[in-house]
Length: 475
Image 1: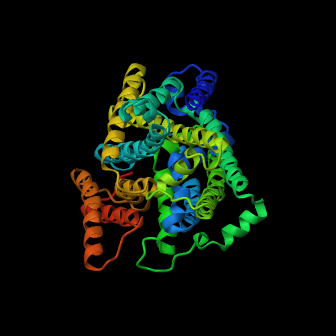
Image 2: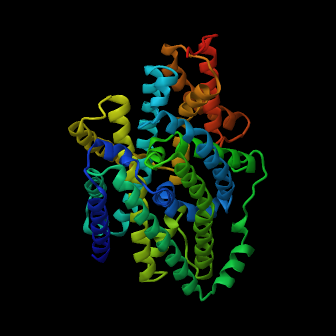
């Protein structure tokens, strides 16, 4: 019962922030926040939105099978953020965009514009739903299952809560609620680490020594056949940031609420710098949990995603750890999901329906996005067979590749692809990538990792180049 009270109190806090920040609550506020957001608030809030509940649960569990090799990808994130800050953001600010996919209409045509926006809608809907699914599953296990509440009903409740505080103020509210949620999530992480150290009877120095001595602290993987090979992970990290931040309406919509380009760039650099130490903390927590379980003879769950929820909810770390875990996972979930649904609403109204000024339509679309996400969550509950963080990046590799190819072709060539070919090229590339991943795994035992994203984008770029056949953009 107390878990429900904690979630309710946290939700009331978010509602209070939403009420204070909604302003006049028209579409300009919902989509662009009137471009008055302080850069530091955007940077701090984006840290929580980037990590989400998937990071909170899956990253500590990753050490079981992959040690700390996830840091290889995190190292690639910083150069990715620099490219977004100094290559993409100047373009978006110069064109004064509300939706970043409007660039495709200016550079190419309406077909390319709609194709790019459609791939964003597909990718963000799937990714946001997968992230929220994990939190729904945990709360279902810890709380709702004891009351025999169906999974679909508990997922619906979470979506209703998110809708309540985002439906009025939109991105202007999100900037500030994300700050609150990032602070809560990081505080919960630190307090859980303290609970583990207390249970072990360790001080900070002993914990650092134990982590350093553990084989789970291995960072670099130099086997080229492995999906976690260093250069695969590092380069994938660069391109994942480019597509999942720089070509993502969700993340860029927050940046475009900053007053000036310089502030938005500063936000990107600070956000990219904070990402590595934040993820290092989550991985250190994972090592500490494995060491704790081994010392006390605790059998860990087969699925790595379940390790942190299992130890926190099983009474092994005390009541404080369970409270912190519950609040932290809810904060992480809300932080990523609320901005995603706002961005999806924006893209649908601006890019697909072409009615950015219709407030009644925007409200209906916002509800529709929530209902569609509920269907995705239920579907993933039936089909899920992998780590959730792996699922998020796998989805990105296939669905963001066409966006990478479209934007790269537009920015680095002056060719004009044939209009009718663009949707087919963007569909053929991810299908080809999937086929190649199956063939190489069976024929040569080579397993693609997240580098599929780069291959996907390259195939789209090549297809657009061939379709252009000498046609050049007329200024």
